[in-house]
Length: 342
Image (cartoon, rainbow, N blue to C red; front, top):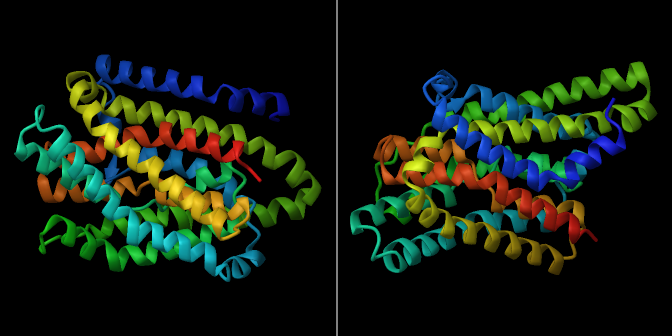
């Protein structure tokens, strides 16, 4: 059983754990890349199975405490859902395109070719047009977000992606023959939303029936928090191990790519956070609302980048860098959200 002291240890030193996992992942990727290649190759429709399992373990703790009777009420929170839709679909893709154009086309003109700049811009646009549908459950859980509201906003976001992703990417990239990998999209929704949701519901009912609600809340739920964080850190090791060679071989370009992506992430978070406060949203709704726009549906972005521009393209590299920086940056936003809790 996880004690309060153990949970506090993980949370108190989470930044150090993250740094350790990043270094460990890069080291493993550099010196054991070939031996772990089979793990990175364990994919189904561009979704890495080991990473999917780890993300599932991160999401399950929120799903298991979900009060399904409150989902209907969460759907009535028009202000919160409207803010998410506006930030994700009317602002985020266009600010990402702007930051990418500003940095890759202008500020970085002395270091990268115009052709490579176009590739990098395309990758950034794909990230900006694919807001998060899975990891937001983790960020919401770590900031005491409302589970029911988080589920509703993710569901709304999934539906909008089906309609808006292609037109927005086509508009910003200036191309019309985009083929969205619907298999990747649908599989991700099933793995990251449907499966943990059903498992959480079954576990919730079974455990409360057998052990009681007091045991469930005071013993079982605290046990899950270290599991969620351990899965998060393990995911970090794997992601950096998969890309260890790219990081070491192209450190300068990795840095150049990371800068506008980081600025975009913080910009969208602060914009959504400020909007939530102005609308009078409670912290449990404002926090996941800000998190979903700041993070990305990287499985979709990576899959489309590879399909459109190739595995070794600059666009694909940008989406991969987006994956690498997302967890550390989002953890810093989790810390801010908890610090600003009201």
